[in-house]
Image 1 (cartoon, one colour):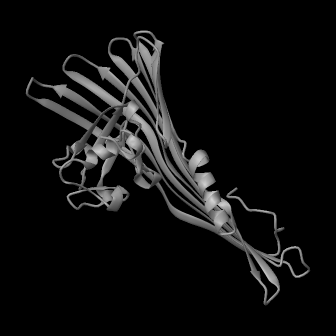
Image 2 (image 1 turned 180 degrees about the vertical axis):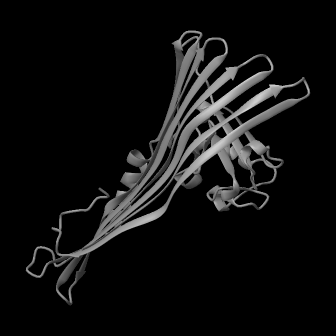
Image 3 (image 1 turned 120 degrees about the vertical axis):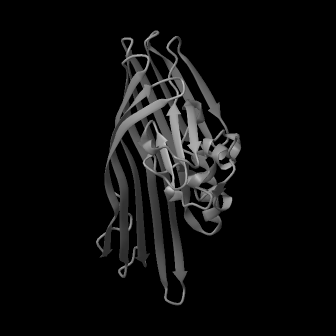
Length: 330
């Protein structure tokens, strides 16, 4: 199933299933049978994923070229998922080729993507790395937004971009042990910068106003999985890793009244807002194949949630900045 600009998208495939609902224009997340979007459980390599959309949901964070398999469960959730009300999506990334190095490159008017895979030790270990990056900002969004502001006698631009990178390594340690290391990082970045000038002929004054808004948000995931085969009936899987989701918003407003005159006054306000979730996860399970008809699973799951629901840092100053100075999030 293709998403925007013909890019294959996993979340679009999920949206086409029976009982799956989305908000207007498919930008508000996914719910199952009128459930809420925060009642979903989405896992990548066994790690929690809190944000699945880029560009406000127009794209998903999952690069389809690097995905091996995913399973969506809408009801009757296995107990190993800890209990859910809406749906569970369990996603596994591909394993790299153990025989030869190969790759894939794709592009559309909005983004480019690439995948490279190959052996680390031929026949025993391999790697696969993938990445995506939007190309809409410089050739399209920035020039068009500059032109639009110029029509209103303003200076400025609108900039948006996102990128993501994933990698997976797998190692065979003898005949009974295998280790997988999976990493993912992705970030969306938005900036709106507008400078306008207002002239008051009655008061013989000129006011210059600058408004700068920046928003950054994204996921980071790191997971290590160890599989051990005791015999043909008993297999163990241990998984340790962490998952983070962070959001940061910065706003800087500067007002200059009567610039370059004895009555010049420079005022500014700035606000920095941060919020993040950081999870440390340890889980494992044993699969016992009692017979061709019976499989027994026994395991455990530990999650340490670190929540920072939001912190703001604000400042208001008069006349302490030169008119050509700016504040940054740093």
